[in-house]
Length: 510
Image (tube, rainbow, N blue to C red; front, side, top):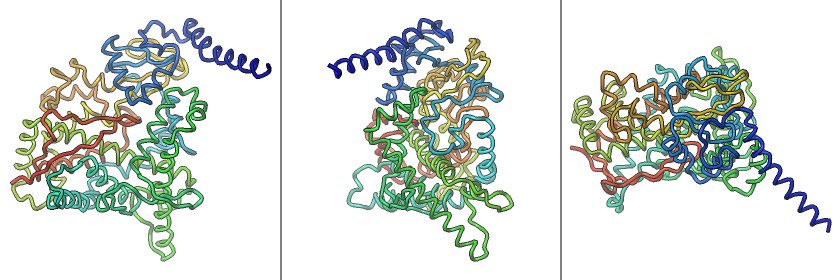
C-alpha cells in the first residue's frame, strides 16, 4: 500500500515538473518568446534539442527549421536561433552585451579554460596568455617544426603506395589527424607521440593518482564532446542530466582525454624541472605561456587549470583543424575543375621539382588556395552548431527584436553560410571563385568559420597556417581522387562536426 502511494506521488511530481510547469511557463510567457515560430515541442521543453544532439542531427534540424519558418526560430523554452548578419553583430561582435550561455557549463572541468569561461574579465586574462604565442609572427616561426611532420605525412603516403595494399585507398582523415596530433604535441609539450608512424591514435594515459593505461585520443575527445554538448542543451538541468546519463560510457571516454593530457603535462613539467636543476632556462613551447610569465617567473597555476587549458588547446588545434582540412580536401577532390585550377596555381608558385616541400612564404598569398579554404569552411565548418550566448541584465536588441535578460540566443552557422543574399548565387555549391570577386570582403559579415568578435577562435592563425601547408603539399604532389565522383563524406556531430573516414587514391603528379 505504501509503495503504491509512493509511486503515485512520484508520478504526480513528475507530471508537475515535466508537464504542468513547462506548460504553465509557456503560456505565461515571461520572456515574451511566443511571438516567434517554434519548432516541434521546443517552446515547452529542451528535450527536442537534447534528443537531436544525442542523435547527431541537431544542426540539420535547426537549419530545416529556419528553412521552414524564416530567420528567427524558437528552438528551446528560452532559446531563439537567428539567421541574419545583424544578429551576428549583435551577439558576437565587439562590445556586445551578450555573454557565453550556461551551455558551456556542461563542458567545464574543475577549472575554466579560455573557451568555456563566461566571465569577460576571466576570459580576457586567459586570452592574453596565448596572444603572443599565437600571433602571426610566432606562428610563422613554427614552420621549422611543421616541416618534419609534413615529410612524415608524405613518407606515410608513399610507403602505402609501395606496400602490398597499394590498391586500397588511404584514409586521409586519419593521416591528417595523426599528423596534426603529432605536430601539436611537439608545439605544446615538446614531445612527439608518433601517432602517424605507429599508425594508431592510442597513447599512454595517466590518472590524477598516477595509474597508467592506454587510450584512443581521438575517441576520447569526440565522445566526451558529444555527451557534454548533449546535456549542455538543457543548461538548467546539467547536473540532473549527468546523473541520469551515468550509464553512458562517453563520460568515461571523455575522462580518457583528460588522462592522456595529464600524461603529456607531467612529462612536460619534468622536462622543465630537469633543465632548471642544471641551471638552464625552461623549454620554449606553447605550455610555456601557462607555466612562466615574460620574466620567466613561475605562474604557479593550479594543476587542474593547466589540464583544462591544455585539453582545450590540444583538442581544438588537433581535431578542429583536421576537420577543416579534411573537408576542404574532400571538396576540392570532388570538384575536378577546382582541383585543376589549384594545381596550376601551385605549379606556378612552386615549380616542377616535387622532391621538396612547399615553403609557407611561397604559398601564403596564393589567392585560389585561400579561396578554396574559405569556401570549404563556409560549406563545412569545423563547428556548425550555433554558439549560444545569453542576454545579460537589462535585455538587448538582436536583429531588431527586443529580448529579455536570460534569453539564450545563437546564429545558425549552417543557415547563414548558405544565405544567397550574403554569398551570392548557388550558395549550396562549392565555388571558390566567389571569394575572388571585388566585393568578396562583404561576405565576411556572414562568415562564422572562426566565429567573430572578442570571442573569435584564438587559434585561427595557426589553423589557417597548418591548413594552407597541408593542402598545398598534398595537391602539389598528388592527384587525389574519391572512391567515386558522387561519393559523399559523412559527418557525425559532437560539439564539433566530425567527419567520418575519407578514403582517397593518391597518384604522384609529374
